Amino acid sequence: MDPLLELCGLTIGYKQPLLKDISFSLMPGEMLGILGRNGCGKTTLLRSIAGGMHRISGEVRIQNTDCFRLSPKERARKIAVLPQQTSIMEGITAREILAMGRYAYGNAFLTHADNSRLEQAAAVFGIEDKLDTDCARLSQGQRQLVLLAETLVQDSPVLLLDEPNTALDYDNVYTMFDSLRRLVNREKKGALLVLHNPEDALRWCDRLLLLQNGRQVGILRVKDADASTVQSALRQIYPSINVWTDSRYGEFRCNTGKL
Image (cartoon, rainbow, N blue to C red; front, side, top):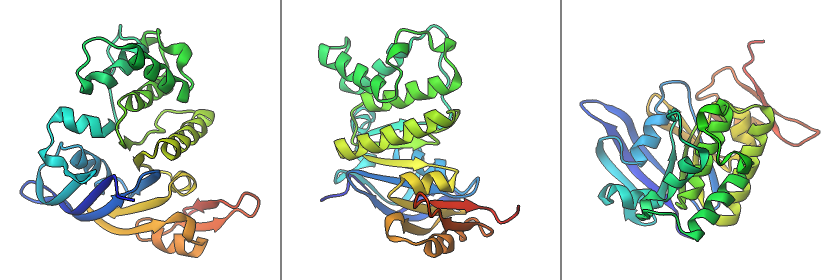
């Protein structure tokens, strides 16, 4: 099976590198989490893949195509991006936001198939009853779900999600991750997620890319690891973290060791 996304020695920056020598692949049906302390380059990495940063050296390949040679519209057909922060103007409905996901395909008007896809994407995140609501009337968490649904409407094989659980309450965090996990498995998409909570990353992601000061310090395959291996890997970026396995649920648990 060929990777959906490949980075080979990617170095990004201007006079000085912001990211240096990043290499990994993203496979169909895989969720790959990015962990690292603030300022380590997580968001910069997503922007780089999306073509928004200056490349010094290395390659980004999407389905065996050089990402940097794609036009913006071609890139949008292959990569859907959820930025860390997005503002939504008053007066725009959730349906109109989701419809923007079809712009990469050049449709001036939505077809019946487009509308069906839009409604399916809304149902994935449980916002089908919000489609005709002005987004200004939605909570911040509901707006986040609208933006997540927009990435699905785009029908791109690669999803770049920067802190997708931002502003979501406890129930919606679970619903979002569970829905995303099922979608990625079913449609064989690849999802690259910037996350801050190691427990969320360990629970939902297949592998973790570990960043420190703009450099890749490791890739952890979660399902093949025990608590000791996970703790050793994560201490490269969180020196005081403790990791153990919850005997009741068989999931990894973490704390900082500073309690």
